[in-house]
Length: 479
Image (cartoon, rainbow, N blue to C red; front, side):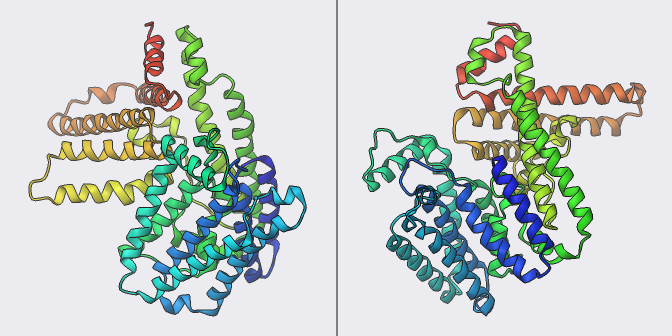
């Protein structure tokens, strides 16, 4: 998000909160959310890409909602009108090309309207087929989950993204020689995919609460948190929507304003200032003094935190202006006394998502096997694989895998150390450890944990393996 996006979001949030008619403000939020998804998508050199990616998103949303929602709710008039309104807004956006105003047509660079109508007809046919096939919905759900994961993999793997860029250019009659992986950027895909996967998995397990289409599309495309989270749960978001106008507006405006101000300070002042000295692939090869390298590594660690935490504060603050309370995402992670606590405080909604839909199910499965692995083996596998998956979420490349392995091993070592300490405490009445000053012990734990995490960010920041190794060597006095 840019400052312009943030300013517009703040204005809209205040308007929707001050609007006394809840039903009308709900429609405004839904329509604005659709428009903002197109607005947030950056202009691409690939013709019409900035139109098609959001449009495909809304097609997936309609299909997912058709899968998880009972037919009797789908056929309610309010839902039919909501679907038609969403389609009409997208159709209006596609008609911008016919305005003749250059800056408006560049807004999304829409294709010919007949292409949009064909796509809409295909989505409608598929949605009708899903609604009719009540017993076969589980297969459609599997298909959508698989599709979301495949798209995710293609976007995160640069060679695949480059090939998609070339194919799309070829279909458009554009030159493939200047194709690049980064021109195929789908803003917000990770976060709306996580929300859709959450909804589908909950439905598959029989736990999903039902939502009308207006609430559902607003949940997926909620503009304050669309690009950088937090990742809310549908049932929590529905409760917030239902009760948002029952809260004290002055308190929400005050607290929302504070969070927005804090976020702007963290992101646009502190994070952007630290970016000038934080370690990066270029500076890593130019600086040889170990002292300066440590400064650059620490700067990167804090820059990353201020940047991400700042965006989260802005999202939570804007949502608070609307009367909606999003879940917290950071809780002073660099003051954690061990790696486990750090990952319970850093990007909390992401780690909770992976814990719910990967770590816990895999752990239960491995423990339930007739020939179960040793407890330590299960812990090693689940912690290591979970952190590698979180790493791959950032990008499918060696440096991210190494970052995941680094943190996974750190979690496993701490787990074993904690178990050893528990066993030792049971077997001994020795209180010598408690005689050691708790303040010193706490400070040492925080210092060690922070440095472990900060060193791990080297893998995150530098794509080249040999350069990363050279940085590690220079940090500790090597060449």
